[in-house]
Length: 346
Image 1 (cartoon, rainbow, N blue to C red):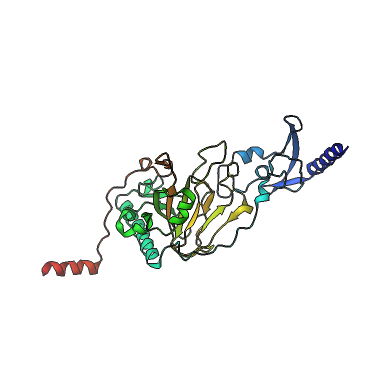
Image 2 (cartoon, rainbow, N blue to C red; image 1 turned 180 degrees about the vertical axis):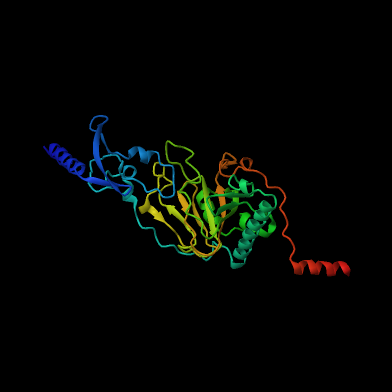
């Protein structure tokens, strides 16, 4: 009798839910719950709507808002809540917790002198590349990208700086000198390897980036441990006007990759504070409405398995991009030319 009462109460809840419209992507859409019988004493609750095909074909646009179809699809373990987002014990909403406050590090970070050195190196590289592009009339090739600079959206540039390979910047590349390596080694192991480095530059007026994950799961059948991490080090103090990075918490878990607005977290840290996250975690750079350039150093570390580290051949393959060649030197100012002539006369 208790089983019958349980089934009857569940059927009543389903009937009540089907009578109500559901808001999906800011519009009301009639939805229903279909019970799909699988094996004995097992069933699956599934949300079905007129926009389900739209949700499944989401292309990752920046204005995307996740539909209820993606949030509510879950396995029915005997608990049904008629509120959207709380169906089944495995619901995404149950993991919606406010993250702990960010505690700025006083140790695992860059010094003021290192911050300044990296900042001016990034600005100088950007100006040098753009000067070279202008001198050679290569503006139309900017969209396709070069080996040392690539567009990541309007007003956003991903740059590889040759100067980062010099001894002057060993505080970034030397695992014995980099302040954040104890944290990275704790995640990936003592043999973690630096596989890529560079700088992101967001110009004033740049748009919000498309939500994305830098890398996918190496195994799509089960959740595997973290195989790579990103270290983002802002070179200016973050606030919500200069385009900080927004993260969607939990999206590094297999099956939870989609953007969910209620799960986003945007750490506004001070300059030089590293933000370390799983390579699979979904994120995007927000729009820069300030009048300042937003420069961020990024470093990608990989765990080493069987003597070989993971390398992303999609995002960081130089073969995909045109080589810019030798840089065009900055023309001398009037004062510099005058000083040069004086030296020649002596």
